[in-house]
Length: 53
Image (cartoon, rainbow, N blue to C red; front, side):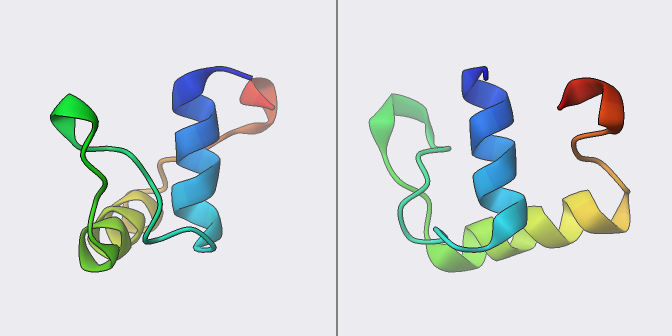
């Protein structure tokens, strides 16, 4: 599984909101930032399709 797929799964699962590294320079995102990204992804139906799993 690639780095971006792993991050996408972590964001969509909602289990690691405080520990996801999606910021530049190795910083970790704040929980509210991850929730905003998750809301955007689910609203726009962006995520792992069957062909990506």
